[in-house]
Image (cartoon, rainbow, N blue to C red; front, side, top):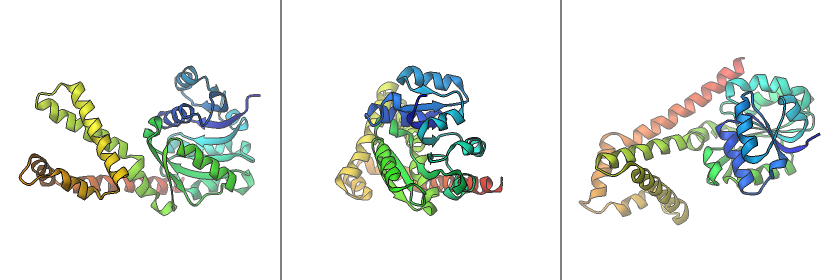
Length: 275
């Protein structure tokens, strides 16, 4: 029987990012990882790329894995939990599903199941080692399992622990925000193309500018407003662009986007509790 250190239920984008990250960073070897997804093509893709073990179904994956990561869409998670509950005795369960609170998880995987539960919110830049993973402080992992989980997610980027009451904000700020950044990069590239720049060079330039700006914030420790001021020469080109953004309500739009995301996360939890 094949025994895996980590078993992934679900093999979509986020699971793929984590799988790629832990293997590329050498935290786990391919033979230590198993997965199952209802879509056979997803399983085949990752098996061909990394030679990971593919289980025949969720229960068999759980039985042959020490740690199980739940990486399915939130709407499917209840059915998956009910399916694997008889097989989780002594297992460590990590959920990365948005909107599923620790209380919701432990309501199904109660003490009688013998499982330990940890909620984590990662993001897709984990694939290139620049992820951000929030670990929920309210969990039932023992000290050794929690330390291992922190090491796993640390190989994918930054890790921080938060109380669960902040998880809606975490999802809005870090879980979903790569999409906002991609949208901004695309918009900047479109603007450069409008000004005559070839599209490929526009994408590279916009992405590098975002990367460099982010590193400046992280590595200098300077306030983002100070760094912005340093670029804005009096009467210059940058302040003209900043003024145009402010006229369109740029800051308010971004803040509204995060608030909408957090509201949706809270709503998903409420709806999940009603089922």
